[in-house]
Amino acid sequence: MKQDSPLFPILCFAVLLTFTAIVTGYARWVLGYPLCGTDEQNYLDIFTWLDNGGVWPISGPGYAELIFTLRNWTGWETTSVVVAVAVVNSILILPLGLWLWYRLSLGESRWAWLCLPWLFVGSYFIGPWLEGRPQQLGMLLAATGAWLAHRDLRRQGYCGITSFLIWLACFGYHALSFVVLTTLMFGFWARRFVQRCSGYLTLATLLLGLSGCLALGALWYPLIWLDIRINHIRGASVSAFFGALALGVALLLLLFHGLRRHEIGTHWMRKLRAALMLRWVHWFMAGGAILALIWQYAWLGHLYA
Image (cartoon, rainbow, N blue to C red; front, top):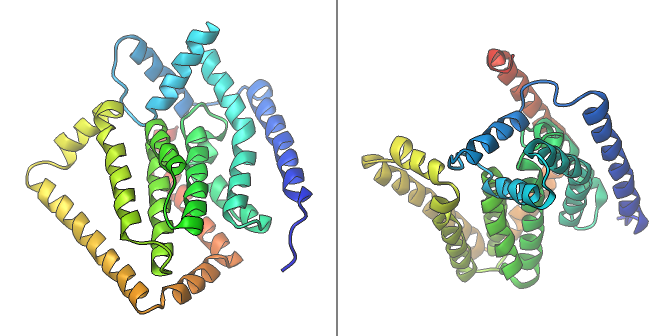
């Protein structure tokens, strides 16, 4: 297969950096973005609430600490700091994110470009791109952690300390990014496990790291933890929830163990990867996400008016 020129990724990065800088500047200072009620406005209201003694209510406590720290250093108003952070993130996140996907795709830039439909159809990315929200840096942390975990598991069969530190930082900065990174890390382990390149000790280490992150939930996400305990998982539901979770994990481990034992895991992983790399699969699933967003706004349009 023809290899990309070493200068090609750098050229793409420079073009994207220029593009995002122009788009960000035009949206902010020509169009006057944001044009309507957005999460940036919601976070500004939350910062005001925190200044009045409130407790951090939702995802992104690390984002709040970043804003308050920069506010103390610069002496700017909260709104100015939020806009400045949003502008810097808007310029850098897309180029850096695609570079990380390029690294994850084992050096073939065309697979990184196939991530573009995903990045632009999901509310995880397109909404936060021009806004001051924790998803921006959170996505970059998730991509960085995924790259490190993929590299470590491929080279040595276990995740290094840097992967765990990024994992912890991701949990403290943005909950959804933490969920995405956690799924990818365990998925990468499962792939190496069925290929006989990793073992149960690595799984135990990952579970220990996950437990350590979640143990900080009461500190970083006190209201979310309280809401889960009071409204979602309480009484008999605790046993049912964790029982179903344990059963699901056990069934997955049995499946992975069977694939590993019968030495068919590598074969199926190659077939799965080949299927996921088909261009029409990417566009089909991205199209499904677009239809889901259209349905969301059609069904819940009154909430966005």
